[in-house]
Amino acid sequence: MGKLHSTQVIGIVSGKGGVGKTTVSANLAVSLASQGKKVMVFDADLGLANAQLALGCRAKYNFSHVLSGEKTLQEIIIEGPMGVQLVPGSSGIQHMASLSISEAAGIIQSFEEIEDDLDYLIVDLAAGLSDSVMTFIGACQHRFVIVKDDPSSIADAYASIKVMIQDYQLNNISIITNCMPSSAEGNRLYQGIISVIQRFVGGEVGHLGTIREDEMVLRSIKASKPLLTFSPSSAAARDFEKLAKEVAKLTAKTSISGGLQFFLERLARQDITNK
Ligand SMILES: Nc1ncnc2c1ncn2[C@@H]1O[C@H](COP(=O)(O)OP(=O)(O)OP(=O)(O)O)[C@@H](O)[C@H]1O
Ligand SMILES: [Mg+2]
Image 1 (tube, rainbow, N blue to C red):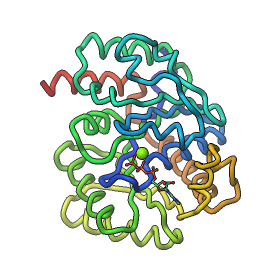
Image 2: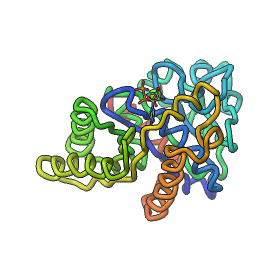
Image 3: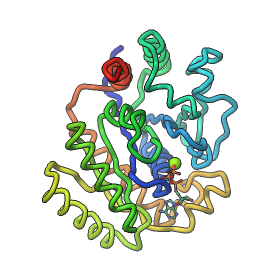
């Protein structure tokens, strides 16, 4: 197993949909990869398989084929830009929360086979706090909450953080402010949210950084290229590079045991205890 336990598993969450989870998952992955890390994105969104779009690649098979036994995990993984690997999602992911013990064991086994020196597994989650989303969030080591400066995104981010801390006793939660006019505005948004959290919830929630609003984000998707290669000098691309450095610093400090196998075992264990 060796390096298996050094993989950092990051869950990308938000209360509200459409705030940039997939954009952040894909571009953070590419930025970390460009800094020499080995990264895999796991598209655990139940809806459209848009991590493929954000990475500019197209998969023939997806996770439902693994769950149905038609394909192995290895067979569905595709390679995107900078060597970022992608586990394409499907609506079948929702069954992850209701797998039998032997099915879960099979998936753990298949992840063990593909993984040898992965630094990061970034899990792009669906919006909201359904049971299956919480199952994934709980199994990750780090939880990055994406928030935009609009009232419903702020309210939903706050509500999600409250649930994670109070109902699920989760830690290692960080905020990423997205679609901001400037990093100063991002800091201000974070300060506003954290002051409410400190007052009514308690617990530590850090700020990993701000991604500025940038039309190049949309243009790069239209061009089927990741932002970092499509427009490396754009504001958002530079913000993602900065974000990747902060993530590397944060995860270097993390001494929690874990890794990929731990993530999958926790997924399986929650499945058992949920019944
Ligand atoms: N920093 C940004 N600047 C400009 N546009 C952005 C930025 N971040 C995200 N977007 C755009 O906002 C839209 C929503 O982003 P994205 O799909 O990443 O959100 P999501 O949280 O994954 O949504 P869903 O909940 O539907 O999965 C996309 O069109 C994306 O291109
Ligand atoms: Mg998405």
